[in-house]
Length: 264
Image (cartoon, rainbow, N blue to C red; front, top):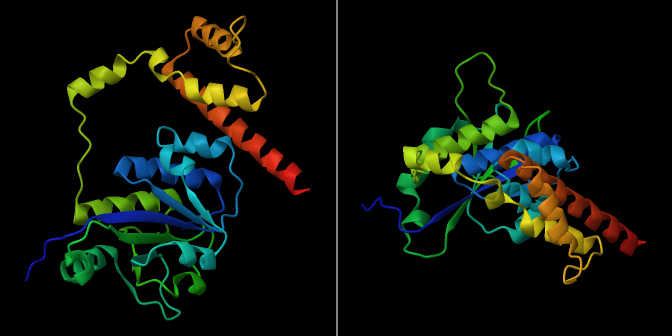
């Protein structure tokens, strides 16, 4: 029997009714650590401010490109059918909770879906519940498996972002992936990076345009003036990243205000 995987696999992280925006941001950072990009939110219970961006730190991509569904009906209407694994720290109530590692291994070795030769990725959803009570019976009713992340202390309840990081690490240990290389040359390159290399040109231009400024004026280009002023103060790479987060957040808030005005 051929146990080789014949098609690509796409992992998607699904956060259900998340309460704290920092956990969503920290999950985005964890996804960047593990090499994943597809973040899905179902019925989030929090608003997103700069705090989420701060928690995402250098892993902004998944958060900035997240998909948000109002409820499960919208989720199932748009997401491809694949494998859904609900992660929980609670058993009982008819839940047949299995070991996460064992479930991934068995699916990898026995699933005919992974043996089909296809360019279309097979989608695996990992479902994580809200921080207070976790996934409900309704949340897991369509899941293929209900699994627990192994812990070794008396407390089996994990912080949401910690749980996603551990789950993705376990997934990588089973399905593999290219590990991040941290050789001396990369470290040297990172240390030698100049602030001008990370100046948020596009974010600043987009912000100025949305604020009503014209950037094609030759006599006094407000973008050029602001850029020169900022560079004259010799800000650090970290400070430029914070500036970009502020610009992105203000653009989101401006869009929300404009959408609110249009709806009235």
